[in-house]
Length: 127
Image 1 (cartoon, helix red, strand yellow):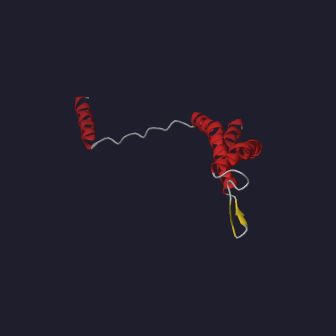
Image 2 (cartoon, helix red, strand yellow):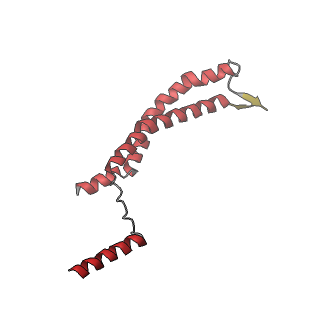
Image 3 (cartoon, one colour):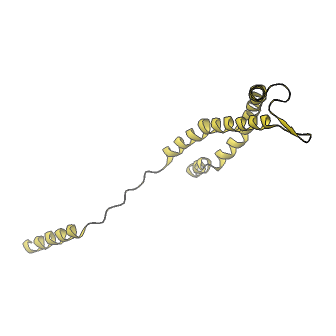
């Protein structure tokens, strides 16, 4: 009963869901603030600074590529943390519970079969 429960919990679906909910909600706020406070202003400074840094205007429409760059940085940071803090350790745990592969027995060659038959015939003649 407990083995079945353990297999269910370690199957990956529950763990993936927990990772998505907990890490996604808690860590996103932190990384979003980091991006808003540091990355977006850095992009604005590199691309001209001031209010117009990180954006350009065409026919009165503002395209904020600085905000998009910040969102990309946020995504990469969150993905890296989830991978290294959750996925890698979970894969190691799952590898411990995997059953070792049973080595397949090699089929005897024709020569080995002939030697075995010869030995059996000799044993019958003696006995």
